[in-house]
Amino acid sequence: MAALTDLRCERAFNKEFLRERINACFPELYETGIYLKSEAIEELMDQIVSNPFVSSPTSIALCFSLLAVGSRRLDLSHGNGTIKGATIGYFRIALRMRPCLYAEVSLLQSQALLLMTYFSHSVGASSTSSLMADATSCLQILRLHSSSAINKLSSDRLEQTNIKRAFWAIHCMEKPHSLQEGLFPSKPEKGLSWHTKTSLPPEFNKDSQEADPDVYQKESSSPEVPPLIPGQKLARAATFH
Image (tube, rainbow, N blue to C red):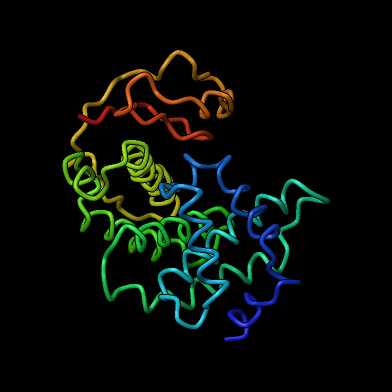
């Protein structure tokens, strides 16, 4: 594949290029549903750049999904705010890997599907509904609605919290998308191992869809409580136990 050959071209994909796009993903951490640490993502990128033809389809899909999400953010923050063709090209490469993602269900696979779903949803692509269904199915198979299952998948407390945020992120994308498309949402609340609260935390401005961005850089007072997703008017907050 030409794209994998390009990955080895230092001129086109040098480390600074990759780092810039990875870093661009993290300001949207709670919105995109990234739960892998930046160090792990950079290590994965380095492995793919060094050995693209022996990398797994899941790793390649994740790599190009990250490039698409990060590049989109950079595109919108520079110039006239138009998404470049190269950015869409990264997403298309990730989509090409999609048929190969179903050999096994893993956190890496769910991360790739979450990022693909987020990008597709953000640009209004026709692949959104099917990607959302795949991502939701993967999360349910991994039982990411359960705190105990998450604890078995990862021993890192920060990663556990980010996994819970990622689950909530796909839930927040799915409901409005389902209403818009006339579909029935999966309603994962029935099986969630959390309690609901009837009001938002005081630091959120209910009259605006935009909350103070500094809020999302802070950890919750309890490591088990993931902050809400920015840019979403939610009626309830979730607390895992």
